[in-house]
Length: 96
Image (tube, rainbow, N blue to C red; front, top):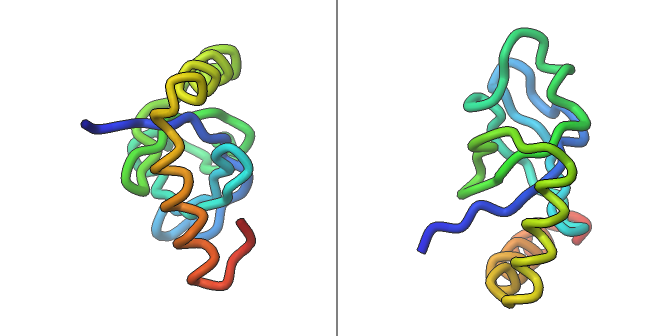
């Protein structure tokens, strides 16, 4: 099953490659913002997006993000993905 998890774009990390840092349930991960970027990349900072396999696939509003995260957590669907992201971040020496 493919799972998009809401994350907030917190910073542009590489404008040339259209990469940004997203925070997903307290875990930070670099993602491609190419699918949602339009115009000035800094306009994406602070926005919420559905994150899937390292890509910000579509922009969503903050209320929808909160509802989706709540539903995912209550179902336990997001836990495996979040644990994998935390393990990857720790293996790469980043903060989890």
